[in-house]
Image (tube, rainbow, N blue to C red; front, side, top):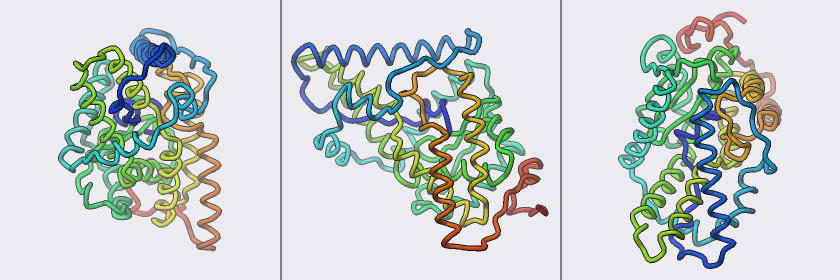
Length: 333
């Protein structure tokens, strides 16, 4: 997603579960800390609905990868090889994605946030998806894209394995133009296209295997390994988000849109972070700071305009206002 609710849809972790449990108190203590952070984050999210706009708690690590590496050690070659050996078929991906989506929708229902899967907003987003989807390298794997619009003012969007996209009404209201929404759509499709969702599905499978093996000779160690795995499941990989932002900007540009328009979404996210709907520490948030993302998009925009000097780029403010995609009607600007 573009911000916080992505945790329910995108799961990313590191497979350290195939190793025997480490000995000594330090690893156990680290894992206990991990379990405490997981439980604390969950309790904070559950209680957020009953508390008046809690402030984001301070935390000494702004880089999630750096924090997890310090706490648990960097991902080893053995971990990476274990992930490479895990195969995820399209059917398995859809099954995992549906489970993640069902859990997310159930949580939204408990928060009294309705999910809409038809209507003007959904059709508008579907038209934009079909504008960008053919540019995906693996478009054939995701021929069917499900779209949901959450009736909430949160500025957010996200995707689930298998090809489900979720957009919050607040994003449509704050984007300002069709070009900005196209970039958000491209960002989510890029995660699918680059296999980021498959990587997360593989890690989920590793976690499931570890859970099935939890009756082994050291249940405590295996439980702590699982807690560590789940903490990494929630952490984003900044390089994945940067790659998705760059794909989105390039695809928008190639489709004739101005990729700079997405800066309006980043500004809305920045404002939202001042009063976050779910109080999560920085290392559990779903994206790098919007300021950094804006700089990356502007850098790529300069590259693209040098390659295609004089290109006329569309913004589409009226398209977004009317919820009529440019593919159906182009308005004067």
